[in-house]
Length: 265
Image 1 (cartoon, helix red, strand yellow):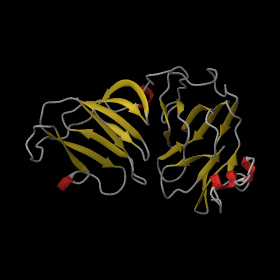
Image 2 (cartoon, rainbow, N blue to C red; image 1 turned 90 degrees about the vertical axis):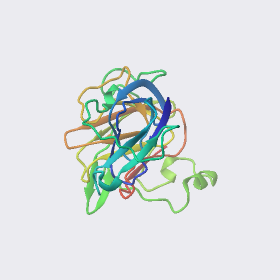
Image 3 (spheres, one colour; image 1 turned 120 degrees about the vertical axis):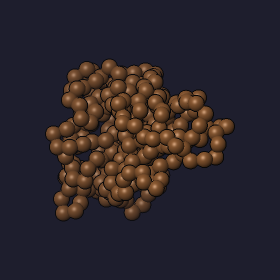
Image 4 (cartoon, rainbow, N blue to C red; image 1 turned 30 degrees about the horizontal axis):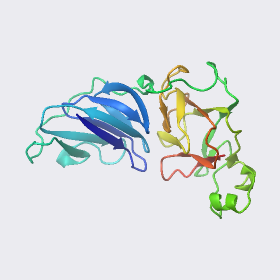
């Protein structure tokens, strides 16, 4: 049995990953152990992490990672790598990719320990509920009308130098101050220009109570992670977490050139 950790470190493209002749059992998502979930294809957005178990006969197998943008396909070995089991010959695989029949569905991922979102089982059933209105105006991304402005002095140095509140750190609108040890719900509407937008929260994991492409709210055992993707107009992704790790934390898009960030403290 082999454990494989897959991480999408690209600045933009979504990767669709499969391994010839293999089913893949997901056991971890963004550092959080999950109930084993077996698929034959995984879609990984920028910044996402999955751990998998694989178990097949000794041999060589193609790993395929087809990007959503750029040079697609596998001709000439592009977007491909070799999974070589111990004891296999040092040769290229002769395996052939097959059509997926068990694509990963995020709503089927269940945390292994302490499942369940904080708050009550209703929309807005938390201490603080927020809606982040995302827009792209004059070639600038904004959240609730504000675009992130980087501080001239590093945030931790500002705190060590005497800054006492979140409003001391950045211009108005760039910082949202949250009460400690409170339950938080953030709704992320889809439809922003530029395709998929994976959001990453520093310092916390969160429960995805409504996933991309779904209109169902799951408060009982939603996937727990620290990166989530938002999608098209009319869609909505909703996350919940508890403010149990005080500090200045970024909530930002993982697409590198979309420098639109919300700082949460």
